[in-house]
Structures are given as C-alpha cells and as structure tokens.
Image (cartoon, rainbow, N blue to C red):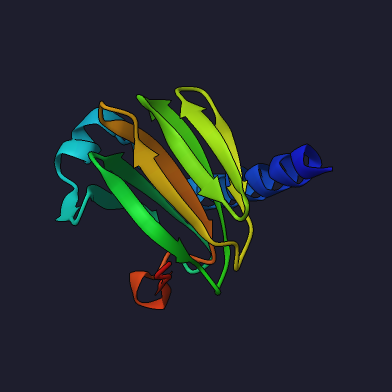
Length: 138
C-alpha cells in the first residue's frame, strides 16, 4: 500500500513538472546545485524548482537534519549518494543511493549521514516552506 502511494505521489510531481516544462524548460546538474546550496546547521539545501504546487530541492547532509515534521505537506526523497539513517516516526530506515522514501505530512523524522556526505533530492507538495518546519526536541 505504501509503495502505491509513493508511486502516485511521484507521478503527480512528474505530471506537474511536465506541465511546467511546456511553458519553461530548466535543466539542473545535481552536483553543481549541491555546491551552491545554502549552509545550515548540519546540512546544506538549495531549492531548484518552486511552483505554486510543488518544489524540488537538493540536499547535502554532512552531519544530520534534526528531528522535525512538516505539518503542511508530503515529501518524497530520492537518495542520490552516500549512506545514513532516517528516523521515520517510530522506525529507523537505512539510507543509500537509489532509495526512495515517502514522508507523509505530519510524520516526525530526522536524517543522519553515516560518516560521509549524504545527498538527496526532496520533492515537496505543496512547496517546501522552511518557516513551517516544526523542530522537535526529544
């Protein structure tokens, strides 16, 4: 069931992207976008695409993204490179390149790099708004 929802969400993002591509065309070199990313505590991120309905961002986790949740929308992560762990609600999930993870709205999660930089693409719907991130102290 979870895989079905991941596939549906990725499909929606791709369709929205195709609609956007009909009016404007953008190409991104992921490794270059990560280099340009805004530095934050433990990670870097750069919004590559932002529309009224979704956003696509490049992330590089050097240490960790602390425990938080997004009350406003879902995220789908595609792990590009590196290894690490994702705390997803009550589960701990190992991460490596090629893995896709769905993080539903409101699920508490954190991401920790495993000794090397962990990079991923974040597809968010609605568009990611850092001001709406709720940081959780445990």
